[in-house]
Length: 142
Image (cartoon, rainbow, N blue to C red; front, side, top):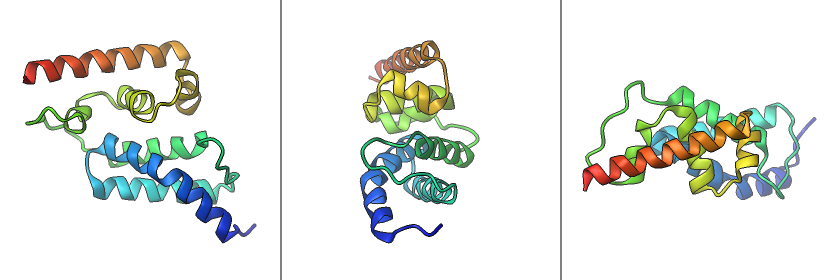
């Protein structure tokens, strides 16, 4: 079934910033983040999912996470700065995804659990571990 161009434009305009922001923070670089964002949207449309603008579609965010993990560097570099985007790659991928969704995109714990298909307890634990770890790294750099 063909997609209405106006509907897709509205959908893309509504969610591109959130999806790109996640991918950029997860990957720490513009070029792979743009690629992951594009792939997330392409997969979403190919699967003929509804183009909703009222709430961030879980499937779209899952696609972004999957694409970001595929494009991730194999060995994280230790940062020379105290910038969050330079420290984030030190986290394991699942903890990093939870941290970005919860702390940067302000997604609730319940919605994060739904997006990542994890138990709420694991989401809360990952968010706490990531927050404490990033704080410790940041404090050591000061």
